[in-house]
Image (cartoon, rainbow, N blue to C red):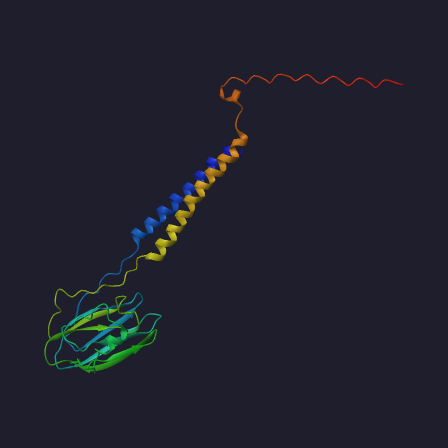
Length: 242
């Protein structure tokens, strides 16, 4: 019985493996990717930016804001985490990826290299702040970031230009919504355990199947010669009576 049910069990496990792999590949292929925000041009002197899940701003690029004007910015935190919106006060400079939050904060408005009196806005989750600042007198572009620890390194930054367009070589790496390493690890573990289960099933099945092997005559081989009968030992003579 076990020798016949083993292939069915192995086939069921193999089918489950194929289904899991197919569903995983289909999910990875159809996982939506976050599109990069388009560059916003607003000569009116006001703009809005939102912190969204996945460590990113939307929009993440602004240009042609007016010079030497009162700028109104509306910052909305649409995420479950706290975020900040800080424009770095160093014109025409991209923050190195190695900078931590403390180093970035020293470059914000009001600090030594700052040339822009821009706001530092700290919004709690699901809240909104409105602030005004005076734009620079000369054309230039600046980077803005979230100064919460680790958020900048995860892609939470953007660029804003006053009196000019943003340079074409400035790009913003938007947060990815792909499954990421944890999902690949989980799927890999499932696949590995399934393969191990199949191998163990065959090994154990072969051992158990040996006890259910067909006799040679069922497989077309000649029957083995029966062993010669051993004659019984003669009974002992009865003891003689005295």
